[in-house]
Amino acid sequence: MKSLFKVTVLAATMAMALNAQVFAEENAGKAAAAPAPAVSAEKKFDTDDQQAAYALGASLGRYMENSLKEQEKLGIKLDKTQLIAGVQDAFADKSKLTDQEIEQTLQGFEARVKASAQAKMEQDAKASEEAGKKYRDSFAKEKDVKTTKSGLMYQVEKEGTGEAPKDTDTVTVNYKGTLTDGSEFDNSYSRGEPLSFRLDGVIPGWTEGLKHVKKGGKIKLVIPPDLAYGKTGVPGIPANSTLVFDVELLDVKPTPKNETEANKPAEKPAEKSGK
Image 1 (tube, one colour):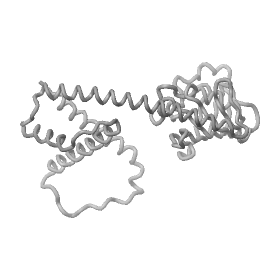
Image 2: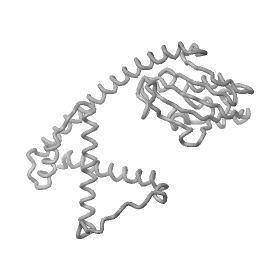
Image 3: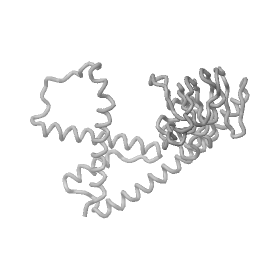
């Protein structure tokens, strides 16, 4: 019977290979500019297979070390000595546990991890909700801040000129997005690339908020969770987060009437960019 332990190690190895591929793709453009790393003249291995085996072991060790750190964040602290002993005993075919015991133990461990992760997620969501309310209460006292019926808060820094954008218009913006503690999760300025999208293709807080400025205008949006990502959140944005955006409306292009429905986006640009 194939034990869950063997399946776990295989999954870890596959994850490492995927991470290596992603890392290589992300850094492909940096290779030419970066100086070549120094290579030791000393020969460390007799064969390529020896070096490959060592590299795999080192990568697996790093993966396991990172996993232990992530589990510690959930309040679960595994004994590294026992982890290494388990690997050594498995290679020596001297495991202290049967395949059935290994599988049962890992199933119980998986249940503990899921329960701890759920508890932490709920705790973080509650903290985000409280921090968001506190921030919005404070922001409401600032000069020229307005709150709409939906709960959206905004502060116009520069009104701009022309007509305010409509739902079906395509807008081009530069923006910076942060959580209420100042943590930045998205920034088109840093990327050096403004974003264009149909106004009805983003989160409700943006669709409503950008109608309060015109081309060339600047606005600060404070968006409550129910107008952003609500109780689910997205990577980099915890559940129940209030989002803070500084937005510059660079351009507004009306969509021709005969193209309004044909060009309606099937996917919200905000879900790709982090808004």
